[in-house]
Length: 256
Length: 270
Image (cartoon, rainbow over all chains, first blue to last red; front, top):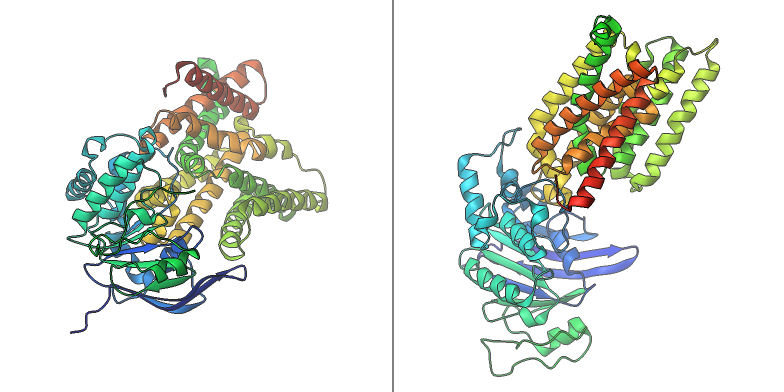
């Protein structure tokens, strides 16, 4: 049986100002995967996600999302960008911002929201543990709370695939742990692609791991081999927990 | 005061102030929340080219201004998306080119351009009844367009990248928004003039932003503030016999300053 991948990237090249950022990337994400892409800062992780989403055109290579072009299907994905692409002083309520995640599915020109949409938004907020903040204004929230709203916005449309770009970059360690618990639950019902520079967060429930530093080092399993990490980070890393296949890495302190 | 209301020109001025305030409140809200103050300045100064052209061709200068502002808005929007230029640079170019063209056209026009000063600094006490009709049509166009695209505009002005990801027609929406700014600028020329347009476009919205929890309320309060500022300004200028456009701006700026000071003192919004 050959299953159709939900995301398929073939021989993808991308360069910026003459510098090659992504080199011959091949990537297949299947339904139910919890796929972690790790790599150093500047390794091209965010660029890869943006190319997959059709936000920036590749030099060459093909990308298919759910069997179609990114521009046709990307509204069916949930996307959590790394940097806050929005102005957090904007006058909008938490619920209003989450509803915005449903806008892509509205066909009419007015794109009005129904009472059902509000129920969906409140549900997404309670999944993220901030149901009580629904009526607050974005600018009154802390950074960690804002990040939860950003994830709720990605979740509200019940996407088939959730793309997360460094979702824990703005949050403290206890919140980070909570985030990964939430993601573990979500992984039961949706495909997740998680991008991070912090290899300490790759915990037991990730099903596949790849390392990205211009090239993508992968072998379709959750085992992170020394070759992959060394290939990606260009330096010896001795944090592979040999003999613990269910827990490929132990947590480590960030050096920088 | 009641005596003033007996004059048609004064009633027209008040009506013009209200119509301009409606457009300002709605479009100014987008200008403030999407940080488009400078681009609005570019569009409004480009209008001077159109006013010059109007004199040169012997047509209504406001019609020339309409062509130039819409043209400038579309040019800047397109160039930013296609030519990969910084908006900042484009604004500088359009701003100065518009003024330069205006001066050239006026120089080439035989005779004296009578109310040039009015177009530069506004003269709401001289609004002809015909212009009121034009303003009303523009307000209706602006209101209907924003009503129809409200949710999409909110998405694009809030988070443009995400709007792209959810497949909204971002480029088209931004261009429509720029054209709406152009239409608003044309309306405001009569009220405060090309040079003072930016203030009336931004100050009411900037104040209302301080106490609004969503875009709709922000527009509503901005309209009310605009009506208050223009009406106060018109009465003050009539009583003190000083230029109306400048008075409206000073009143608005004083209110904005007061709000900022109050915010600093109380350390809380509103």
